[in-house]
Length: 433
Ligand code: AMP
Ligand code: ZN
Image (cartoon, rainbow, N blue to C red; front, side, top):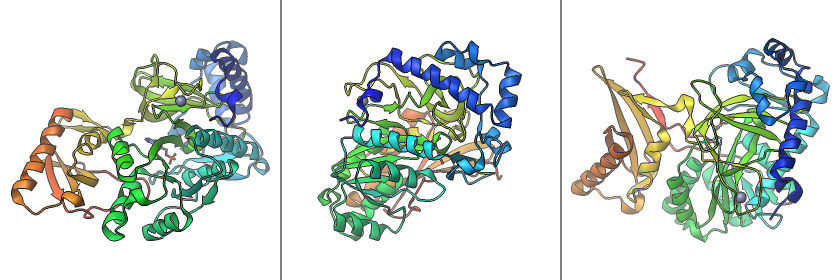
């Protein structure tokens, strides 16, 4: 099911021609900001030199720091009276990065989300409960507009107040959720333990999960708990928010809308472009943004461009599930570990519940990792022998994957701080010592 069949199935050559045309328009537009005027002049980039999409490599990268340095209006390319909305990134430290939108920007963003929703087989027959936070964060309003566009009945629930959320799901017969995977896991606990409701008895058929990294095993776990399809949704405020890349019904990697973004993957150390299939840092360029075009934005997200066509017929390439961020990488005793690797392993273990935390501390001169894991309420038992065997099973499986053997602390279901938005998984106490 396509929302915009022509755009979604354009031949690769037409798509590339369109990208070049839109890239030139974007460059022209970007010159209206003091920031890009200086950057492009210094780099000696001229429109005539852009003949091929790969010529984009002549353009220097834009970083989050650039957005901070030009805060608030230094990258704006239209007069302020032409903008109608701003959003900010969810980061809690430092100056926030702010993105401005014209009415045209909001329309384009909405179109992309309509494509994503149709790609998951959902439409105006669905009742859509949007449990991402509304406000400066893009998760709430972004999907909201797309869902209305396709004619869904939208419940703008925002995040939090779990019991009320469950009441909405039951009263209105919600069929589709938009939510962070960590909050969705938490809700399953509340459903079964406090409300005594089997999540499978709800009317849910799909969930759009995103805004934070999660593993394939977490997705499978969620699908088994709720009996629905969970679709991975990727986006970032600098590129609008949700709607940048989304899974289709084949649930095999995320289509990235290449008529609106140029996608590159680079080696984060050298900045050199990597071939399709190789993992590195995702770099994105807006092709439609009017108020604030962004060229070659270093997302810090680690992924790869997937090879091969998708059976759904969409010609836009796909990116793999995000492994983590370059700045999420933990170096523990010299070994590189991504939190997503830990999650991937522990969520496979049936006795594990829905929440976990990674704590790092120094023991003398050495780094030490403790993984706190909530037990599954259905299998919870106070039997010491049982607990020791689970602890051993988890530690062993982790050692196999990440090459270090953490201390595993088992805790009762509901002990760890639940997350209603983006979950905090890592507590690094090493620097404080
Ligand atoms: P924000 O700009 O606040 O919306 O945050 C965007 C960041 O959230 C991205 O750069 C990613 O690091 C993360 N993110 C968003 N969606 C996903 C996803 N589906 N999987 C993994 N990380 C995600
Ligand atoms: Zn597909």
